[in-house]
Image (cartoon, rainbow, N blue to C red; front, side, top):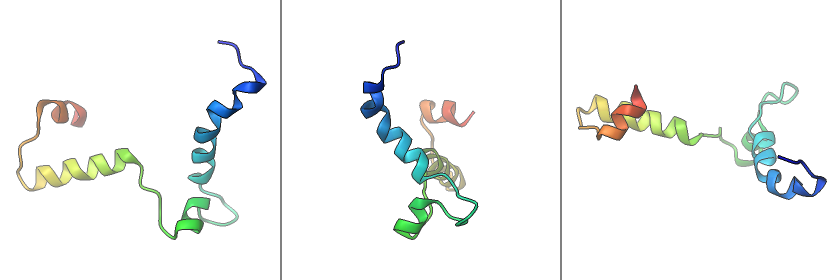
Length: 70
């Protein structure tokens, strides 16, 4: 894989997301928290909370959901 200076446009969204969600020592908050006033919730965190709630309520998990939990 060749890396060219012209490839920056493809990598920009990921770089910005990383920058905006990285905690800063000087401000004690991420830029995302400062702008939106709340912490970032990553999709995996939402998925884990959903699974935990499903298990607490005794609901049935599909086979694919069971595999993710293992």
